[in-house]
Image (cartoon, rainbow, N blue to C red):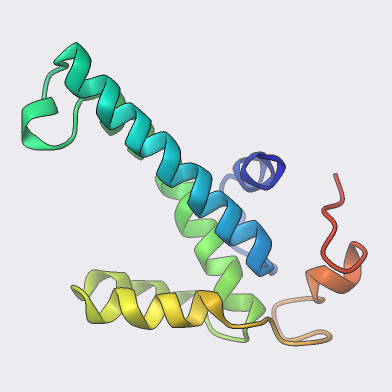
Length: 129
């Protein structure tokens, strides 16, 4: 949960690097919250629930849109790629597969053009708060 909150605190920070833990914990918790809100939308029959995105899920999705893109950009920076690679998400299926491959890769050791390795900065993968 701390990694999720850490990514939210860096709401619109598109610079720097995000290690795999930061990205994947954010992704996992985001997925669980989205599924829970989808169930709640269906149970409460909120507007739009029948079409796939109810009121609660829609508001949550809008709230985490910028942090989701920001943590993805920082994750790409960690492997030495430009944040513009996030535009691959606009390509159905293939873009998702390529980004999945990128997000699963280990970060570049040491510094790169986007900053210092976050694992080395905060004690081999332990989050500094």
